[in-house]
Length: 219
Image 1 (cartoon, rainbow, N blue to C red):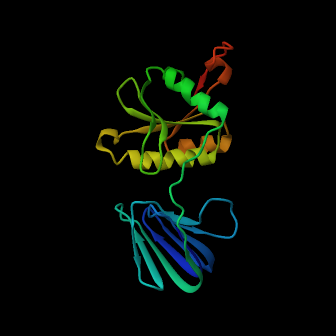
Image 2 (cartoon, one colour):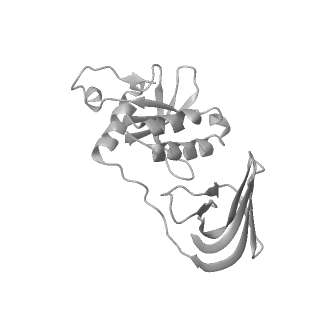
Image 3 (cartoon, rainbow, N blue to C red):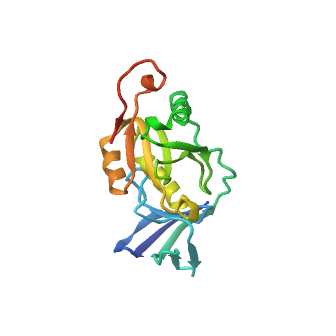
C-alpha cells in the first residue's frame, strides 16, 4: 500500500462533478489499485475514491485516475509531506464470530429462510477482493449474493456493494442482486441498502436452530 500525506486538491468527473478544495489529506493507493482520499476525521469513509479496476497516471505533481466507466479523478499535489510504501502481504480476511459463522452455515442449509425458492450454489464464493458468504439463485434463476452478519450495519452494505460490483463483471452473473442478512439490520443500513437496490432480511437465530417458531421477516 502507498500512503501519501499531501496538501492537495481533488476533482472528480463522472456521474457528477465534485471538487475538494486545497487541504492536507491522506491518499491511499491499495495493491488492487483502489485509490481513496481521506481527511483527518469522518471515521472510515473517504472523501472521494476510485475503486479498482482503474489506471493511475502519476505525473509527479498531478495524478490522474481513470476507470472503464469513463470516470476521472484528478489529484493535484501542491505539497507532499510524506510518501511511503508498505508491503502488507496476504490478508487472511475477516474471521466471523461464532454466531455469525453458525448463521452462515444454517442459511446455507436452508436458503429458503431468506426468500422462497432460493437455492444455494456455493458458500464462500470467491471474488478478487474476497469471498461473498453465499451465492444462490432465486426461483427465476437470477443469481443472488448473500452477505451474512450478526448485526447489519452500513459497513456490511458497503462490503456487499463491492462484491456485487466485482461479481457483475462475470457474464454469467451480470444480473446478480444482493441481500444483506442479519439478526438485526440497523435503520441506516436499510436506507443505504435500498438506495443501492440491495435487499435485506432479518432472521431469528433461535428459529433457524429450531428452538422457536416465530416467523422470519422478509423486507
